[in-house]
Each structure stands twice: as structure tokens, then as C-alpha cells.
Length: 423
Image (tube, rainbow, N blue to C red; front, side, top):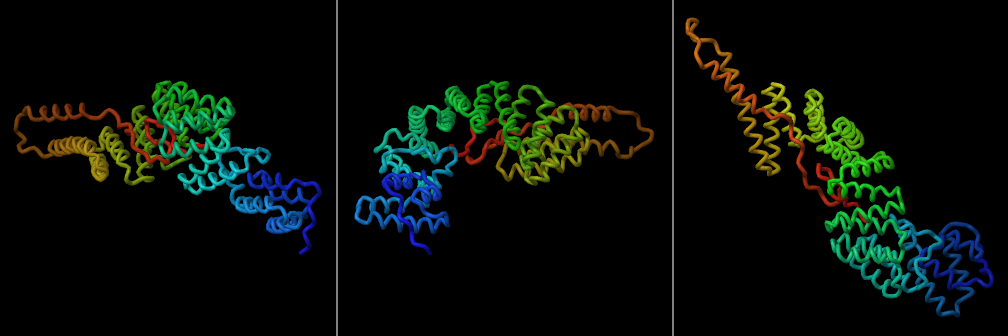
């Protein structure tokens, strides 16, 4: 292995180490800057430290900075560059205060290790040394938001925006925090400001659609969700929520096509199947509705709503025995889920079907005497049948809102704020 060449004359090693610490130099830049040959990264580091030791063994400050840079060179720099939404470029030095930069890097590493308590401490120490370190305030806001400390999260994002008014991510996260606080109009304003800075930020566009939907502004919500799918053609949840908004607006054909698009992307969205089948049944397409419900059941054999809607559609078609079988399965699934109200509703319909099956069987029994005169019994039976027919459900139910885990975007007919990680 060749000896390490001496560094170039008049090179400011303090500046070099500072940039290593804050992660703004790549291995290649570092190597070229001190005149080393371009070889492996491991070789770069060994040669660099060797050449550094040759020219500065007498400088205690260099030795102290060297130990500091060694702690962050490999681990911390990639964490900053790879942080989603941070957009830290190599030429952007986060702070000129070396101690603040050190605490900031510690905060980034702990944040990515999910050590939020340690990360919060490190970011606050960085801010104590440099109060205008805007990205540290954004990180701190993310931690507070994930811990549901919404009031202080809003304050941190607002301060980050004051320091850097062009941060689309800070506006987005401010909107998310306000949205969770129930401040819908303020959240809409923040999302729109985020999109004014970065029109292709689909997360902001998606949440804007949700907030507009919740405010009853359906046409604006439709436009927002349409923007999402124009940019991200594989976003099944945006298609799903767009279909809901179209359905609420009475645009049934468009809603059907959009539900189908959502299911092409995500065939496991059980509620999308139920809503699609219900719309087809309402439109007088029972065969297509039945096929949709059966497909939903194939994807999720424990889908109680699909069994119930299948039973209702078969009942309306006069297929009483198959309907009863589907409803029985629905009742069992509802019972297992603890949905007592749905169990009772399903059992009432099953009893109604059982009565009709019994009446139909009685009407097909051979007559006792060929000479008996007509009585009122047959007409009573017919009246009962007519009465029961009038009690048939007109349409399958649209699936009610179901709770979802915090880590998922909405999958119900009442969209709620997305819970994706703050940017």
C-alpha cells in the first residue's frame, strides 16, 4: 500500500472536519480535497487519517475535532441525506455552530432508531446553541406529532416556517397537526400553502381532499383526489376516496368506474367491493352485484358485510335458500366480531325468509279433497306473501365506517386524516 501523500498546502483542516461532521462532504470530495488517489472508501479513510496525523499531531484542537468527526463520519451523514422530505443537499450546511451540528446529528440518528426521547433531547440542545436551526424544529415537531402532543407540535412547525418560509414539508406537517386538532379550515390553508411550494406533494393533496370532504366541499375534494391519482396512478386509497366523493355527489357511473380502478390496484379492499356491489344492485344489475360480493368473499372469507349484501341481493332475486345460507354466514361473522345490532338485523331477515320458504312449501302440498270449495286461506297466504314481499330490503347496505389502525390510510366511507409518518 503506497504511503499517504501530504495534503495540499494551505488547506484549512478545521473547515474540512466541520464539513465531515455535518455531513456535507462525500468520500470522493474528501479524497480529492486533500490530494489522495481515488480508491476504496476504507482506503480513503485510512489514508486521510494517516495524512492528517502527519501534518497536525501537535495541534490538540485537531485531535479533538478528529475524534468528533470519527464518531459521525459513517453513521450520521447518510441519515441526513436519506431522511424523507428533509431535502438536505450537500452544499447546505445546517449550522455554522459545530457543537449545534454535533447535537443535531445525534438527534437525527436517535430519531431514525425510534429513540424519540433521546432525539428530542439532542434537538433541543442543538436549538439551545442555535435557535434558528429550522430543520431541528421540524424534526422536533415530528416527534411531538407522533406522540400526539399537538399544541407544541404546531408551535414547532410554525417556528420552522418562520425560519424557512419555503419549507413545503413544514407546512404539510403543520396542516396534519391542525387537522388532528380538528381545525379543518386552518389545516386546509396549511395544505394549500404546502402545495403552492411543491405542487407534486401528493400527501398534502391527499389530506387536502380529506379535509375538504369532511367540510362538505365535495366538488373541491373530488378535484384534490383527482390531482393525486394524476400524479400517483397507483394510489388505490386516493381512487377509493375519489369514488366515495363521486358517490356522494350522485355521479354513480363515475363512482363505479373509480371503485373498479381502486380494486385493480388493491384487490383486498373489502369495503370497496361492498360499496361497488351496492351501487350495481341499486342500478338494477343484480348479477354483476352478486359477482362482486362473491369476489369480495374470495379475497376475505370473513367479510361479514359481503355475506350480508350477497344474501340481500339473492333474496331480492327470489333465491331464498341461497340467500338464507349467505345470511347465516353473515350472522356468524357478525357474532364473532361482537356486532350485536348487525346480528339481530340479520336474524330478522333470516326469519322472514324462513317464513316465506315455509309458506311456499305449504302452497305446494297436495289438496286433501278434490271437492272442497275455495276458502279464504289461499288468499290469506297470498296476502302474507305480498306483505312479506313489501318488507324486502330495497338495496344492500353501504358498509358503515370501520375503525382502522393508526398506521393506515382510510379504508371506510368516511375518510379521515392519513396517518402516514410526518415528512
